[in-house]
Image (cartoon, rainbow, N blue to C red; front, side, top):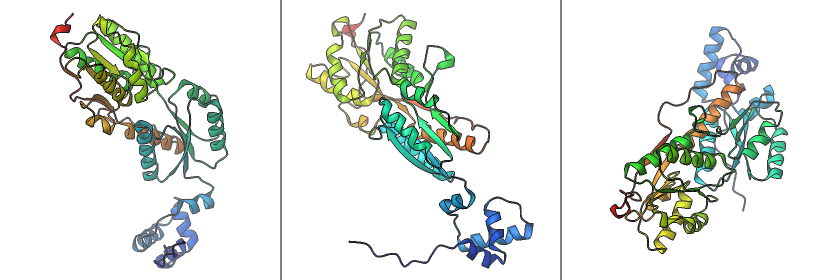
Length: 344
């Protein structure tokens, strides 16, 4: 059943503003477009806008000026915490800057989906494009296109162990491993994400570099696919007979599968083996035991990306990065000192 239309008071127009200000509607339009007016005219228009509570209609302004206030966003896996929070942070920042974020979701491992999404955005009247590129395949595809409008590709460099390529993911990996080493663990197994994802590859590279730097035994990681099922399956690949006392898992979802598999093997966490993971999803506080995990500020990542894109659109200097820490370790009950019987 159709709902009745609202009979509330209509929104004021520029003609109402002009009438109250005692000026022409052309003067109001020039004011809204940022053009210079005489001081008394500008003051009258500002007072009228305040009195009437006038709010600019972005769609109408775009039609009148041929300037778009829409940003196209290429995103992925919105059912997962990280991508959804990045998209939400981007949408919030776009709205506060006077833009509307149009979201196009795609599979970053599907070449046809990538090409279709890029072509779709290219047909729209947009002010700019924000592209989240978690895989090298998507990054390469995005960089191969010539764009008519500003484009900000939110990705990260491939970490090679040097300070110049350090990322939040490599820093977070070190935080996790430092925590385990501080508890006395030296034999640490790594369950990575899919290695075609740049974040997973960087975490895996940082794990290898850390183990070698600290003269700790290196074990070839098991490559999962971010799901709890792959974390559960990975436990079968862990060489427990080699004295493994801790597991570093590349995300919380896989870690949940790890906890179940360890329990079914009769291994207690953290009494027999410690587990640390990545992302700090809301559920990680309520697993048994609660997960020690690296926290990334995903919403801030989205906000920063849009801030930088808007600066490109307006031809302004690139904003500085936030000063507060963007990666931290939340310590819960899934980690504990290495069991004395396992000292080696």
